[in-house]
Image (cartoon, rainbow, N blue to C red):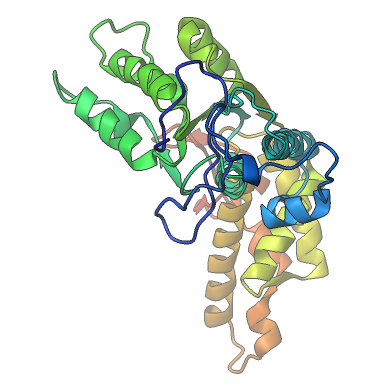
Length: 354
C-alpha cells in the first residue's frame, strides 16, 4: 500500500518506519488489515518488552527531553504522555495483527503566548515520527499570512503549497482564529478553512494539523467552524507560568548564555516579574527572554561607561541588580506609547525601558 492510501473499509493502517533524512523509510511489515505478512506477526503467546519498544521508538528519550526543556506545564506533559502511551500500545497491537482505525491525531493547543506550545509541537512531531505515524517528523509553523491570499484565486494555491510542505509531518497553525473573520464575508480565510478540512480528511494518514491560540478565541473559532472541531481529537490547554516557574526559566536562559544573576539581581528579577505580569501583553517565557536581553544591554552599557578600566570573567558573567531595576516597570506609567504599550519617565524626565 502506498503512503497516504487507505483501505476502502477504513480499518487498519500502515505505520511508517522512521528513517534518517527526509525521505520515507521502508515499511516495518505492519500492513493494513488484509495485507499483513503473517511471518512478521507475533504469536498469541509471545511477549513484548515494553521498555525495549519504547526505546526503539525513542519515546522515552523524547518525553525526557520535553521534561528537561520545559519548566512546569505538568498537565500538558501528562497529556502528551497519555497520547504517547496510546500510540505505542496501538503500535504493539499491530504486532499481533490486532487491526484498528488510525487514531485521530489532529490537535488544538490553547494558551497565552510564551507557554511552550511550539516546543511541544516540535517534540510531538518527533514522537509521531519515532512511532511511525508520520513519515518525516518535521514541523511547518505558519500563521494566516502564510495561508490566505490577497485576491481571488490566490488563496487556494497558497494554502495547498503550505500543506504540501507539511505532508509527512506536522502543520502548526498559530493564532488559527485569524483564519475566520465573521464580520467580513469577502475574506478569503474561509477558503483556507475549507481546503484544510478537505486535506485533513484526504491526507489523514500523512498529515497532523495543530491549531493554536488563546483559549477563548479558539473556542469561538471552533464554534464557528464545527467541521474543524469534529476533526480535532486532542484539546490541550497550556497554563500560564507562575512567578516561581518564570524565575526558574530565567535562570535556565541565563545559564545557556553563560550569564548568572547576582543575589541582589535574583531578588530584583522576582520583583520585576511580580510587576510585569500585571501589565499588558505579558507573554510568559517570551517576555522573560526579552527582559533578559534588555538586562544584557544594560550590563554592557554599565561595564563600558564605568570608571573601571579592567574587568574579569566574573564581571562579564554577572547580571547586577541595577541591570534589572533600570526597567520602566519599576516606575509608575505616566503615558501611553504610540503602540499602546505602557511607558514611564524617570525622575530626570528620560523614558525608561521595560
